[in-house]
Length: 108
Image (cartoon, rainbow, N blue to C red; front, side, top):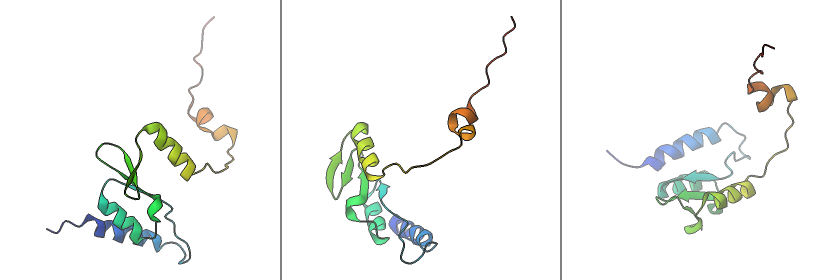
């Protein structure tokens, strides 16, 4: 059995990419936990500086150098890389109103 997981991953990512117009790359960044993930992401056009490999210690390696060691710094990195988009939602359907439990009835 050949152990080349990146070939399968590349095929899957290329299939997804083919769903989009040729001049559009749907992949902005990639997270993985193996060196082969970096190969896969490079193959589908993700820039090296936006490929994040999480090593066995839970540290994030970017461009083969240690970048982030804690959840807090990872949070800052992700928020900087993926800034929030403006969105509008109807108040009736926001998470709080949709999922909250109605108040319990109290007999007086």
